[in-house]
Image (cartoon, rainbow, N blue to C red):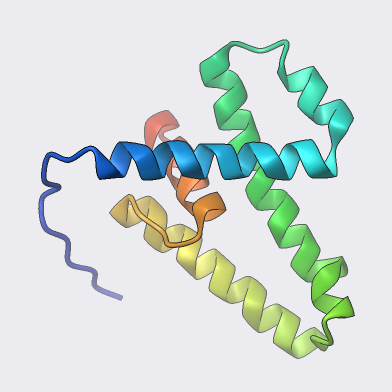
Length: 117
C-alpha cells in the first residue's frame, strides 16, 4: 500500500495531539494495571512514556482477543479482522507518524523515536 504525505507544517497542534495520545496511554496503564503503572514510575520520564505506549497498545490488542470485544458480540472471525485492522493502523502510523487512534499514535511515536518497527 502506498501512502503519500506532505512535509509537516510548523504548528502547535501536533505537539498537543502527541501529549494527548501519551496521556491516553497513561490512562490505559493506570486503569488496567496499577502495579505496572506504579512500577513504571521508577523509570526515567522518557523511558516511562515509551513503556506506557507499548503496554497500552498491547493491552488494547489483548482486549480484542479476550476481553470486551467478545462481550460486545464479536465472534472469532470478526475479532481477527479487528485485530488485523489494529495492526494495519499501527504499521501505517509508524510509517506516517499519525493515527486517529491515540494509543496507536503514541505507540507509533515510540516506535519512530526508538527505531523499532
